[in-house]
Length: 360
Image (tube, one colour):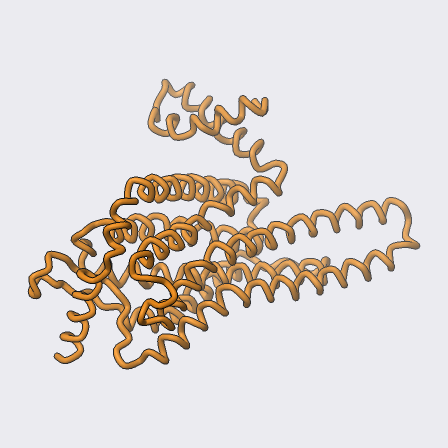
């Protein structure tokens, strides 16, 4: 009972004393279009990325399984987390989606961060294995599915502290026409600080360290292979050079993905850490904390938009294969008497791009 009273008191503070809420609501006209753009770009881009990988059996390997998992993480986050969190930030009634969705969205957003980090680390390990053991038999789809399942189970386990401290509280009994969905760590401020530091370390330094170690190990292996190939015949040297370029290009994809992910999430993690340390708002004033937090959250959510563009820019056949597949289906639909107009409309943008680059 005492805990519930404390939570109500914190809810009243959130609702009444944050003069920064007025500034945030005034900027609603700016933030809502930006959130909408993130959702639209991320959903369409990641759906196309999943379509490209799963529609071509030649792309069913460990790396692409993990890239698909990254796309799935981004897709789930943009469908469930971004719209509801944006609504919570700009609706004066607070959280209007009930207790179940409060816990679900909080856990999903936390698990998505861990799933993305673990997927990037797994890709780094996979890239090293491919370079270090080029003639080793590739693992099958069952192993890949098991790896993805393990990543999600580990992510949900790491999200347990967030889940156990998330509280949905209806404040109408106190006279406030609003509800809150927040993390409350009553009397466990030290535990919250430790967990915040862990999230910052795990989501920022760990993936960068994993990629750095993998890059050094891969560079060492390629140098060894280059030296051993100096006396080989020209055809073999050419084949090895082509193989090395492909591996470097794929690793570059990983490096860019990790850097984009780390820098996108860094502001939000830092702001959350400052809030845990600075309970008196001496570092970030009450007038600006809400705007800064929403801005950093928007920047973090934008990470869901990057991977499809990274994948497309580093794979020469991405656009041509995508255009060829969509245009082939479109011609087939035309032969069937014009069925599926809604499906045709969704591919108009891709068709226009195809014609611009003269792929058709």
